[in-house]
Image (cartoon, rainbow, N blue to C red):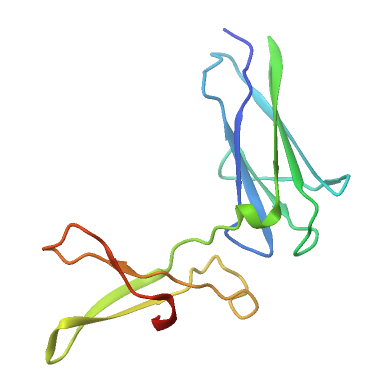
Length: 157
């Protein structure tokens, strides 16, 4: 039985501009029940934190404004009967935006041209506003006989 150490905290937005989620974990077990308190600050005010019902060490936070220049500050405190330890993680909104990968990716041979494929995909369902926040894709491929990855220039996709 040991007191908790500082939790490791990460945050990501895969639903921009709706919000972001943060998750945390202990690198070292405490061997006794440990709870976590989460506080999120933006522009000197506390934001509402919604605990994730499916993941005990995760929460969701709505972005209070889009394109904010104020950093976010997330404080996670691990608490058990032997003590407490905190980690504060600060970030700019743009640094945590990471969409989920595209869905339903298919590659279909082009008829009468064995050296070419038609590749298609759909934007991830988690990305809520594809019209106002369009995603750009980077397509890379590797022929079986090559060791190096090839890529398609951005303007061609």
